[in-house]
Amino acid sequence: MKKENNVTRRSFLKASAVAGAVGVIGTGSAGLLTSCSGSEKGKSANTPLKEPGSYYIPELPDLAADGKELKAGVVGCGGRGSGAAINFLNAANGVTIVALGDVFQDKVDGLADKLKSDKNIDIPAEKRFVGLDAYKQVIDSDIDILIDATPPFFRAEHFKYAVEKNKHCFLEKPICVDAAGYRTIVAAAKQAQAKSLSVVTGTQRHHQRSYVESYKQIMNGAIGEITGGTVYWNQSMLWYRERQPQWSDFEFMVRDWVNWKWLSGDHIVEQHVHNIDVFTWFSGLKPVSAVGFGSRHRRVTGDQYDNFSIDFTMENGIHLHSMCRQIDGCANNVSEFIQGTKGSWSSKGGHVIKDLAGNVIWQYDGDAEKTNFQQTDPYTLEHVNLINCIRSNKPIEQASETAVSNLAAIMGRESAYTGQETTWDAVTASPLDYTPADLNIGKMDMSGFNVPVPGSEKKAKS
Image (cartoon, rainbow, N blue to C red; front, side, top):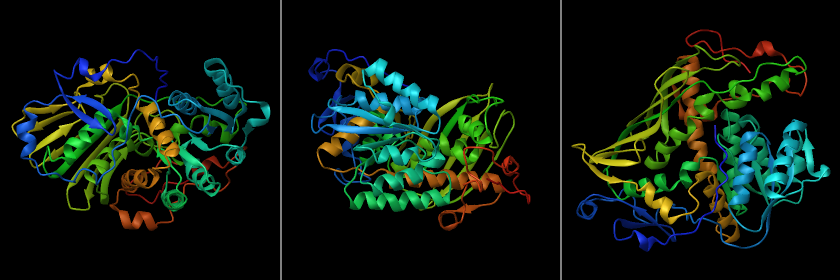
């Protein structure tokens, strides 16, 4: 889960203080310091994978440029929604939050209290909306930007409505949990592009300077042609909520949403999408097929797995291995590794590029970043970029790109659930829809939520 980070601004030290010790590689208009052993000689021999200017590199200054006042509304006021709200407010001057929505009153009031205590922002009672249609009331308020941090199941429809109402969007990841949601996202993203709306998603590695600089190195040919990779999110068991007697079926599941596949998409989609996304971003490829397995050993609530292992075959025939686990007492690893014809890159150990002999030829200089930038939190920097794109009238649209990694994770999940190979073409066209038949805030048919059993007639239900 993402952690809220309220950054304390400290005095800015100019790059010249350490520029003599390390090389300077630009990130947009803001200089970023990196270190590179013997890089100039090696770089001249590199053949770029893509020519500079042909791929997107965000500008990542500490603070968005001043401009028109922007008003946001938050839908989904729990921990991530509260964190995203503060990230947004820390990203620029002249921005505020004017409306809140959630299915639960205590979540709305909790964020309202936080905004008052932390930012002296008052959200009046008439701008605090509760219920399954609260998102419409927030979007229909006088806002410029929707910050959507609900359980992932709801996000596709919220995005669709926001685009219809001409709102810019920040969408937490993942942005869908099934094929029906994927198609909704893709259609809405096209409409956002046509309307010149800006959309940023919560794949914050796209706004993390270490990843951006690594991406630039790989595009410059530092590891040669990409031949494969492995991505990991292995950690201890995530949180869960024990059911309280006063909770309805719906309330129990939504308060415990991270453990229910219809709400979260399972943790391969909800969490591991970050790592899969790094590979699809760096390689520019989508998977054509997936074969995988998973199981449930120690999860306490819900109906989803606690581990997955997926073999993806990408468009050009190379393979990506995806591994994720949420089980206590096991080896942990959250990182990405990409192999190329000339070397390899890994985010583990500080974003390192090695040649085929294992020699380090480039490493990101995190200390230099801390010296030269006051804002190093990618959860805030993604809002800096969103606001800059809106104010400069240079739209960014990330939903269609995130939809690729999101559907890849769905492909892997469905292969593990069924024990069968899945394909991109079949999944994108499938009727897969996790919407419960009797979705409502009260009692629901809980018999429909079963743990999938691969290779059997027992199907994943929702």
